[in-house]
Length: 363
Image (cartoon, rainbow, N blue to C red; front, side, top):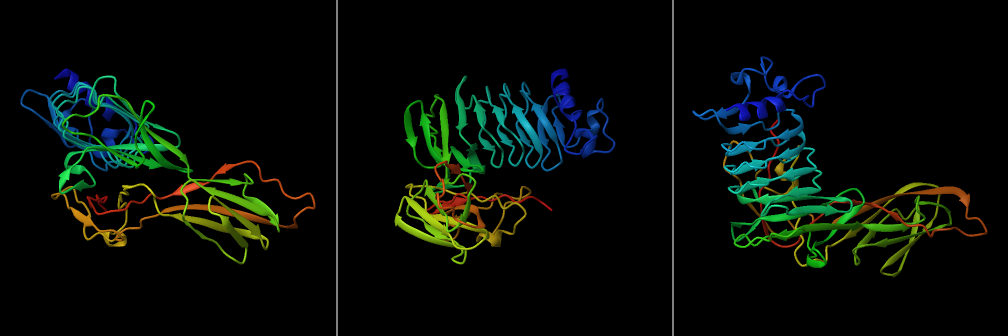
């Protein structure tokens, strides 16, 4: 089929994650753009249609227009550096795995047969046309979204896999809620779809700064004060008492006084106050035992499912700030600390018992 041939050929001719090497050549040194026999792991039907692609962890890069591949049923392009995917019109597509890439947008228009989809660890801010034409799932603020469907869902209730959107805070933000227009759908960082009657409306994942602080450069004089206000209250402050003295009279605002010159790290540890806040582990380069999971996922085998009891993984937010204390004494005029700064939010965690599937990159 000429259309299928050109779609795959065009992507294979793009530059891979290795400078000066095409996607085709990075997978096969004998790659010939005009000879499909040299195109690694592409299966064709007797009618000349692409039906299966497995390019997991092959060093690929660039945007991938795989639209109109109506015979394609399964594709695995996880662990690459692909930047966007257009799968519109892929009406036979059952499984699309594109986790751990650099994807910012995916178009699933016309993927009416899609059953399994996994997109975690991507800077995704927009997923188009999942359940209806014109529908848009997007991130609002400094964060990303991920869509999970079918057997590759990370957790489920009673073994029945769910379809859901996950909001993942990035840099200085934490998930705040999911909205549909002006309506708040949930304050969890995960939104479950009704698989029997999924919404056809747009959904937005909203993010807010995990912590605000003043002064804005987190630099104070010896004897000066630092004000820190967390988004999630009721947490624990961890800091070096040789550098800072804390005052926690107001639970919504901690005041720290600089004791001696130097740089020190201030950490705020908060337990999520949402009713059902979930955390997923990706196990990138780490042994499963490091996070209390007995087995990691291997794509050459059946999915490994592990029940996670409360306490088996860390259940907290970790938000850190590096504070600089100048040697000079606080000036008589005092210290201005009116301008806010958003601090780095590191990690999300969840409570409750969940079923988790972890996938581990092969060595």
